[in-house]
Each structure stands twice: as C-alpha cells, then as structure tokens.
Length: 121
Ligand SMILES: Nc1ncnc2c1ncn2[C@@H]1O[C@H](COP(=O)(O)OP(=O)(O)OP(=O)(O)O)[C@@H](O)[C@H]1O
Ligand SMILES: [Mg+2]
Image 1: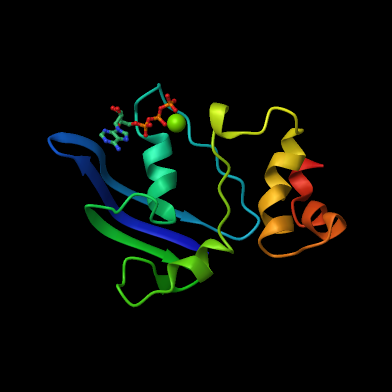
Image 2 (image 1 turned 180 degrees about the vertical axis):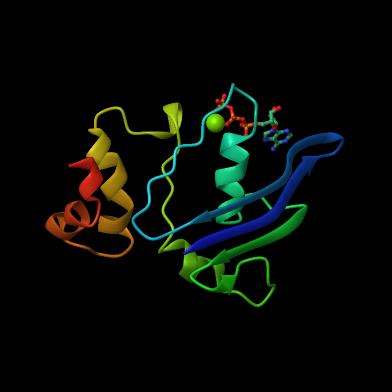
C-alpha cells in the first residue's frame, strides 16, 4: 500500500533521512520510534509531500508521489496525518481529533469515520 525506497531528506547540510526503505501493507500498524530530532515527523511529512524529499521514491497504492504529474491533494484525502502537541485541538478527544478531517473534508458520517479507524475505538 505504501512503499518507500531510499527516501532521503536534508535541510541544507543537516541530513535527516538517509535512505529509508519501508513497505506498509493495508491494515498493518507500524510504530516509528526514535529520540527527539531523529526525523520521525520529517519522515511522515515526506509521505504526503508536506516536505519535499531530497531523494528516493514514495509509492502509495501504486502511484509514485514524487512524480510531478500526481494530483497530491486527491491522494492526501486518502492519506491522513494528525500532528502532535500544539496542532491538536485540546477540547477534543483523540478520536475526535483523528476523525475531524474525514468529517469536514470528505463529509463522512461520524459513524463511518469512526468505523474505518477501528484501532482507535
Ligand atoms: N523545516 C526544517 N528546516 C530545518 N530543519 C528542520 C526542519 N524540520 C525539521 N528539521 C530538523 O530535522 C531534524 C528532525 O526533526 P523531526 O521534527 O523530524 O524530529 P522528530 O523525530 O519528529 O522529533 P520529536 O520526537 O521531537 O517530534 C531536527 O534536527 C530538526 O531540527
Ligand atoms: Mg516529531
């Protein structure tokens, strides 16, 4: 479903991602662990091009996201990301933060949004 090959990202001289290879299948749960500043968020941000990778290939459901002709906004509707700490709504629960985008952007019902994220219920 998601296949990442030799993903690289550097900010000027700071090399953050040095050739990440990973494949994630539908329904698989993957935990990325590492010290603060090791590049976890940068990796996730690269997955939907919130950061432009310096090198490598990201395939999502067979589409190469790094291809210039890709409609990234369409793909982003199917690849959700919830930010950490100050980017979360403190008055909402974890589940409400996670289902907000599908409710607002895709017009899903609360029931469906919740059901398609069964690991969180
Ligand atoms: N836009 C940016 N410009 C320059 N450097 C950046 C940028 N974004 C991240 N970095 C640097 O890249 C490195 C990785 O940061 P990142 O936020 O990905 O780490 P993290 O593993 O998510 O950390 P945390 O556990 O604190 O969330 C850090 O050294 C950070 O300062
Ligand atoms: Mg982070």
